[in-house]
Length: 305
Length: 316
Image (tube, rainbow over all chains, first blue to last red; front, side):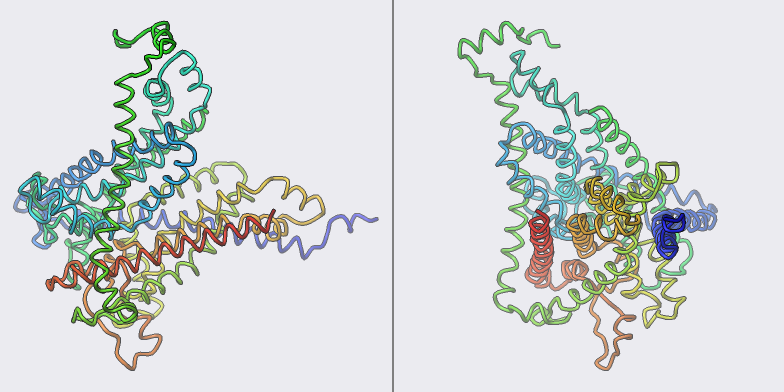
């Protein structure tokens, strides 16, 4: 046998190299997408900020968010975003964590196999459907029944966003708790502790970073949610600075959607159009920070066990 | 530690004496059960209230509701335009995002060495997966709408057409395709690769004939998830100029005219009907459209599960 036989068919080698190049090109596409997002947001935002008219006071700190009139009060939309996110977490935090704990620690395997997919169905429901539900069911049957809220209210939107966030929190928190090794539970039970004591004193501390990561990811999802807020919170034409959750309000995402759908002449209309990108940049940075934080925490759990 | 916490001896003594009833732990467990049941109740309420609203329309109109185009008259409006638009977007997503996503995952899992670049790519993909969907809409507006204009397919809406929408959605679901495919590839036993290489196959031959087929069920599930996401996503479409009102293609419109003209999608139809001043749209038509959307999504998921089960059986 000669050396040439062992080196193989040159055609096959060429094909190997070609395939590798093609795959590497595909892999760089995802990087290109990120670069495109950052570059687009930064350059259009730069146009926005440099085109602002500071002649009669600061346009970023005014009575409210009315982009077509040159009033870009960031506090209005950031405030509404924070309010709705808080409300969503008040709903989804306990419900998501409770569901996760029950499924991971108390449910029998058969019940768990049945219940987990059902919770996942909730995660698969499109946000436009939850938005519709928030507007036609949550608003009249829950919010308006107990308060004198308007039909469109930040409260209804916040609960709707919460409904959307429950399965996310439940699923990640459950994974974190199931990653806690059984010998920790056995040690605790062996000392005579109750199941519930074991969960509170042993499982929760051990899964803490995963549970916190689940909450952070829930917050990030709630901040970025558009449709529920756009449909149920009202104020699609802009909003005065308001922190009354029983009235309408406009979040950052809803402000983008409202401005983009408001009129066909949006493109090329100076600063109003560019403000979309400035808001999106802020949104992108906020969620990016939260996601990186939650990613770190999740990986800490994985490393430990 | 709280002072009132019983010592181990006390607990064991109580347990042995049969006094197992502990109010605190019962309350804790009941709270957990209540939160689980509340989550389920929300899901049931949602499905029941929407189905109740949808039944009259679906019973009265039947198939006609599904095959009718948009209309300003609630008694003849249907979801066909929305289904067509969503199907078109889904097809573009499949054409663009599947090859790119699967290719990326194969590179990352099978070729890339563990290094800085690989780590950067992985972190980047995870972050892309959690960028708010509306931000992708702005990306689509800045890139895909312009791109469609550049290549001369702008049509009547200056680039606000289904081609731009398909490109935007493809980018949005790309991380989902990559992550699910990566997981599927990682689950393929290393022995399969070693056996292939051992009998003299090249790396690509092993991937093509051994690894990809055995990862197929997982990849397929990811693909269905991605399509379902593209079907249900609304926010980015609003930004890139989907038609939220009534529109109709001209009777003599060619295929190119239809592809480059105004379009809508099923979730957008739901949104615009829920905002109509004529309450019949929001009260009866929107719930019916939601039921159509949910049935389509459930069918897609069920198909994926069936195909996956069949694959699994064949491999055993």
